[in-house]
Figure 1 (cartoon, rainbow, N blue to C red):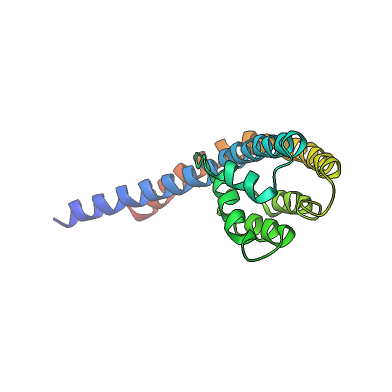
Figure 2: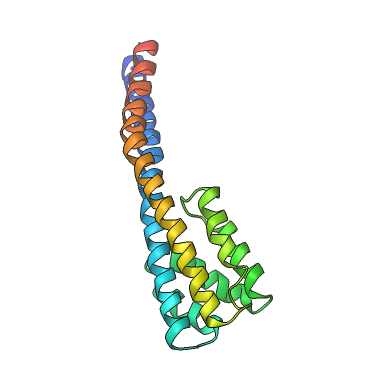
Length: 170
């Protein structure tokens, strides 16, 4: 009986360690994916500002209606916050509070855009979105490099740590 319990616990330790390694490696993949989604969403925002001249709250509502990814849910949060405050603070708070895999550096790049949204003319807003897209391109490249470098390491590390504990406890 003792042998079965010990075996089950060792298997659980190994599986949990492996799962933790997989989750950490998945964060690198998610960061790349979410940065690309943000870039696509900013492209939609830029196009709507440039050609439709709709108010930002309406554009945010349209973007948030998709709800197919976490980035669009951020725009839903922005739409809600806009009913209580200004664009700058709604943008900054929604980006900062977002439950996504991007880093603080990525968030800081995105928050800079909020300083001009709704504050300047359409041409200036489009120009600032293009600058932000350029910064996002650089962040996407960094994220890809980090993913390539670290994803396999964390998967392997999770397995090796699990094996280490199993061997240690046997």
